[in-house]
Amino acid sequence: MSTDVFDLAGKRVFVAGHRGMVGSALVRRLAQEQCTLLTASRAQADLRDQAAVFRWFAQERPEVVVLAAAKVGGILANDTYPADFLYDNLMIEANVIEAARLHGTAKLLFLGSSCIYPKFADQPIAEEALLTGPLEPTNEWYAVAKIAGIKLCQAYRRQHGCDFISVMPPNLYGPGDNYDLASSHVLPALIRKAHEAKLAGASAITIWGTGTPLREFLHVDDLADACVFLLQAYSDAMPINVGAGEDISIGALTDLVCEIVGFAGAVERDPTKPDGTPRKLLDARRMAALGWTPRIGLRDGIAVAYQSFVEGRA
Image 1: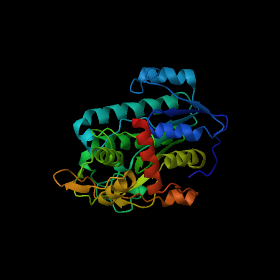
Image 2 (image 1 turned 120 degrees about the vertical axis):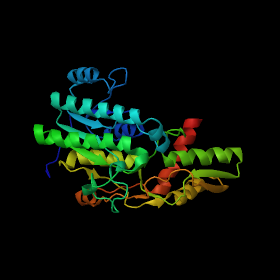
Image 3 (image 1 turned 30 degrees about the vertical axis):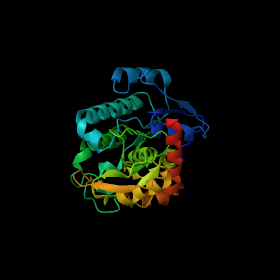
Image 4 (image 1 turned 90 degrees about the vertical axis):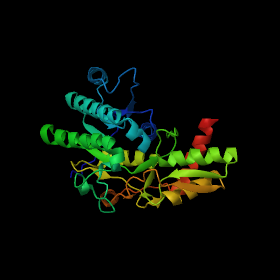
């Protein structure tokens, strides 16, 4: 692994997917660096359209790319639209990564997901667990696309000498999250359910599954800070985990969300719905050894996310 510092100062940095939760957090964080921020709306460059992407890169010549653009969603969305999750994500990553190579991008950071790892991987999950077992079926389409992105970065590094790296975060949350119950992940869905139940004076909310699966959550602003750190300090073919270092059961998470939101009703479980992977805790020791750890605790992070949700509804 290279230990050379990559200086962002004066660089033209393209955040692909700048309107999403992760992309907007990256824009906020990169605004603190002495770099020129580049973004592209879908009208300017639909990232699924190779010709449009190549034209945009030829015109803007980004020196650094952070590939945060992706079609994302929870269990229901993955199960309902498997072709969209696989095709859209494959096209986005292939087009952007190839365009970065063709136009001499000096550094590219590809954002993966903890769902790339096997369903029954040893816990905490080390980076070496990739491709050592079957995936969780409920989101394998998204996971396969993300694995392809990691392998593209590794292949371009090996064949073309490109400084392309891959970062694996756990479940993310924070300002700008998706609160659509048909497509959201578990934490924003719980925030919305608890808030609406509180307003309606409901006696209970229902969660999917048994409530026993364990999940790790990282605030999106922590991830953005980690990405800037890694752009400067990391260069290796091995993907690197960025984690919070602890997990929580879905049942306990629901209780915490209800407490923060102020919903005092009961929590009912629907065991006919899938639990997904039993546990997903990332081994982030390699990241910690580089000198970075997250700073936003889960309780404080959820409180900020809830405030953002309420302001957005208003």
